Image (cartoon, rainbow, N blue to C red; front, side, top):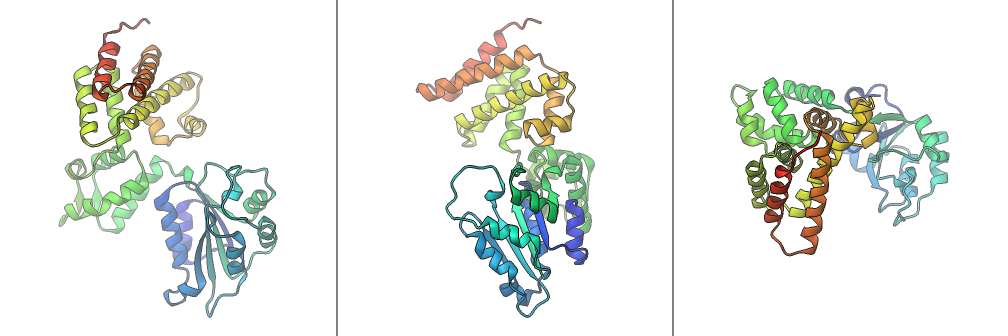
Length: 344
């Protein structure tokens, strides 16, 4: 089931199932789903018939006891289970012990008056586990990780349309770029964009440019382009602006290295015929970042990408082992990188 279908089902309160499994790390969508589930219970009944349990601190048995209880003077009970790490292959010791056998028994015959929902913010579950196989067989599964850039665009436009607003295509492109297509960030920016765009309710490019701050990752992506263009003055100026914005030098360098590593990986794998979707799956990176990386890597030679990556690795070692000023270290890196001759 898609996220759109689920939200419509929750709103209409039709075609509901007793067990749901929500996969993925999209915070905003998780909150939307949980809010929709809560609205299935009348406000005056929510204290008794709605509950959310964090498996990092609460035993599974407590949540199951609640799920197996009949609704208290109501039609249904909704129970949400957060952070079910026991569904993954993680070996990190948990603070509480969970009764997995009781969960398997519950899944054999779910309480018809209860909607039990698992919110699993993980890349994948451990498919070898019996409980995971059973849960996937019984539950209606929604994978938030499949919410791509096109879905994000449609979701934003739909939300604005419902609010009576229009969003120019150029403004939407700018919003996606400045937020790395992160739906949670985009939704957090909408209220001020809507307020700024009164009374005509048309969100224009100038509003996005003036009100939405670029993420650090996007700023670093711009910095990568200046590095590869061997624009020493521009790169150093942008680096200085990031430092003035109180960004940590090691953090900037780490993200820079990560961007170059991504460009190298996409360039190598794209030559082997991998598609954008396959690359996102293999590299476990948001499809929008893969899209940008594919557009950028075509303009640069692999030798340049490798030299930049190794140069930044040396900068990191110097930052950790010497008292030298980070801006000076970056300036020296740029001077050396821009001065080298590339062999085809």
